[in-house]
Length: 325
Ligand code: ATP
Image (cartoon, rainbow, N blue to C red; front, top):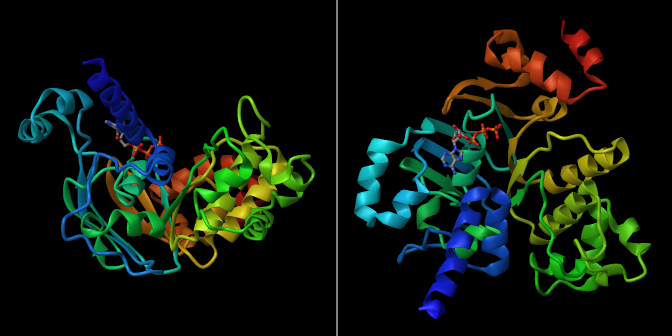
């Protein structure tokens, strides 16, 4: 029995991980190479290489309740779900054209992270569909989904292993020269060159402790090696020191250039650059447009702009606010 329960417990931990965050998606999907709760369809087809167009068609979503999943049969879960949980997303539709950057903004709990998680199938939609490169993600092979979509979160995860090993999760056959190129583009090569063990430096609690900004840049190097055509970025809310901050921003610019990007945005500089801003509230898209259009419209975005973005980009916001006012 213990032999049976051991693996089951391990699996359920993985499942909890999958449900907790995008970074766990990366971890489970890319590293352990396990599938999340979601499996590949028997007639799955690959997303065309380099495809970048993202489309949400009338997407609604409810979170399944974990206790329901463990206690009931699948059909019962569906029944329970309908009665128990409220939709978190309702009729969400938008398109990100190849190479464009779309920013998701909105109050806490609006559904921004949930929207982003439907793309790599951390969860599947309750209704509607999500397409990447014209393929419904539920019909895509998991390997093509994993290759097409890259995720950068505020809390980048590195394993207690060497830097080289951490990077080669993205591309096992990468040469050392390619690792260095990625590290340089991610603005962290110089730092690793100064370490006595270089690429063989062990990262983590019992190894070399990189700062938050450094870890994020190593994670960006990993993304650059993987070279996905679609990037999901959950922008940091916490401030790093200004030097680290500038380096992370440069690394992110490298990571986003030439790719389709869906950014959960917290910075004025990002929303200003976005091709389209989607303003979410209570699970719906309530406004959409560019920064200037939305500020002029004087709705929820204009309010968020005054209260959230101006503060997040301090100490520069006052000049920005003055320019607008
Ligand atoms: P924030 O800016 O605070 O991160 P958000 O706009 O990203 O918020 P989501 O994290 O997508 O919002 O959450 C949308 C809603 O879904 C919230 O009401 C939240 O409580 C709920 N929710 C999020 N994760 C789960 C979950 N695993 N199970 C059940 N409900 C959840």
